[in-house]
Length: 469
Image (cartoon, rainbow, N blue to C red):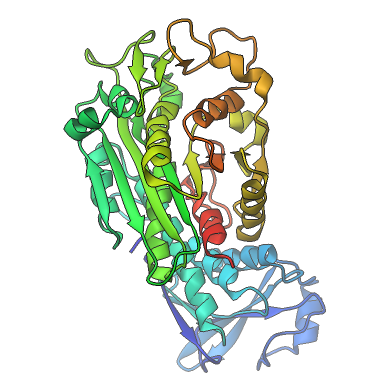
């Protein structure tokens, strides 16, 4: 299990819980009656409680054979965002305990349960540190909502696990094996099949590695009629050294997470199968390891992508767009989707533009962009729409090929925009969106639902978009 903390649902508040969390409103009204050693209004007044989300007051209570604890917690305005903050704070407060029983507040029980479980996530190889709470018991009348939150949290945690796994383990073939564990049909192209089919971008990026590349296709089809067919495309660079355009050492240390977009695609399709969502979704993960060697592609090489378009490689560290281009061209030519969305830790430039809390969305279709933005707001995987500026397209001109993979010189700049413009060339005329998650795909802090390392950003917004009515 990606999250070791178990979740269960009970209809009422159990008697004698050793660690019990009970919400109270900004009016300092608790959700259930409590037998406390001090009258509740006086207790809350003593602590100058305001009912804000994340506010927790711990009260010792008598329990058979010892002392228990009641955690009185604020829920702020009761919005999904406030409930997520409150839930994450409770789980972190209970770290190292065997069990926490939580009275779920009114409002979005799915968001609450999801955040409580995500805050319990940990990834460690070797001796364990201080463990998260081992079991969460949700006292809620809405078991279905709690279970949805659990499913989403487990999917996010799977994406984190895949991205956090060291590259010494995580080869393209290993990633394909993990895709095969999601309970959906999977097709994998090995290097010989990639060569025969003309996937020149994936092959070029993977040439320098001892671990050959793969293209991974996952297919989810609902039991009933499908509302639409969506293709998700994920960047699956299992380690990015930069190739011959070698990264500095500091920039290379986190590059095992450069397949975070591919991890999101795998996790989302596995979750859709468990949810039984009424939408057909095909996932494509373009997986390769970008390494320097005597066989690696060189700056100035020209590669031929799936479908025949040629690209001059000016920088081998702009490799994500090369593997995505093959997958996008294949999706357009062979899969006939209603919409295509790709997701990738693509450019450092987007971190400069939007920081580490908001992901970027580029799109050729206003309705698709609006739907993704709305799903981002509701899921708390927040997105900001970025422009596809046509005046920057000449940055991709090449004198010897159809396109260059990066700008030669610095006339235009805007690296994230020009990368999106590059991908657009391979997506065809159908509705397409590109999510650049380089800034939000990794966290440097333990805070709220986040743990240092991979964030799983993208799972929640895509599941919200694909499953909403």
